[in-house]
Image (tube, helix red, strand yellow):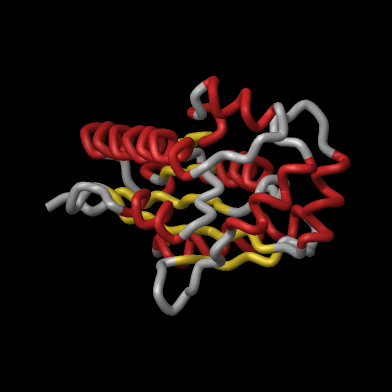
Length: 186
């Protein structure tokens, strides 16, 4: 029997550092990476660029595409016989609501083990980060709608790592590496 491919979904509102931390983890582990923002359909990107919050109807297809992408990648990993950190998949996706996370967890039996990494920060911290960011379609004024939508994961009910993002990037990355290695037994 083949072990489930570990999928770690870095989640949280815009500006919490999903891409920054994911890229550092991929560099450390030499693993596979799926950037959820790249899978948004053009209509979603256009809405967000115009400052219009996405609705559930906007998100379902996008979330399904993300899930399909990592399930397909997991199949390739198994076919190639990869294991350990080389068989790991890092995904970035806001996954703001429990129903979104449940959809992302709903994978074929035995294919993947999905763990969420909630990048938790205060509204003020994330707002400051967003205002300093340039070149991203998600603007600072969109934080309020995401913050309102956010249903924080409960570690007693979901497989989740909760990472406080108030520390510096290096410290956060080291914490995430340590936690993921512990969970992977490597």
